[in-house]
Amino acid sequence: MAALILAATAVVSAPVPSSSEEPIAQWRPLIAQASARFSVPEAWIAAVMAAESGGRTHLDGRPITSRAGAMGLMQVMPDTYADLAREHGLGVDPHDPRDNILAGAAYLAQLHRRFGYPGLFAAYNAGPARYARHLRTGAPLPEETRSYIALLGKTPGSAVLPPAILSGTRLFFRLSTEAEAVPKAEAIR
Image (cartoon, rainbow, N blue to C red):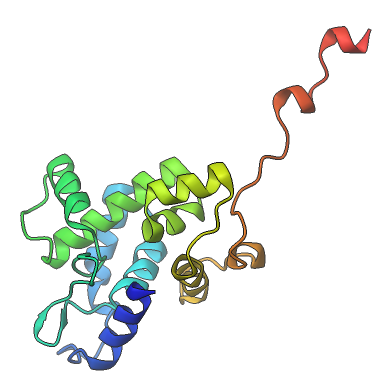
């Protein structure tokens, strides 16, 4: 919930960007660059940025940082940023808009490869370990994550998420195993 409160607070109390564009629109060239580099849809990057920081780089005159320590436009955690920066040759300043957007897009790409769509959004918010536990055990996702997924589903330019995803129930279910789906030759005789 802190990320949602932070994003809402940032939208209300952060200074208005110098351009007349909405906060996310001013980052479109960097979003396009990150999208092309990491093969992540621009809409996903923009939706996460809108949910995480509202497109703002500063709050109360300081670089935007959550209570949990997540930094910048994409609200990337320090250790995650350090790993991504090393892996992808990003700069040392996680608050630099270009590097932060690139890091966020790289992270979305990693999470998409691991969890697919829309699970990547739940993993981005809750963390991949917590989301993997949810998939493994059915442990409920935190209310913050359920709200986050619902918010992303309403973000202009993002895909509309189906109602089952918004309910907070398990995002993926095992339909059948190969053994259940295909009878063995011996069983047919």
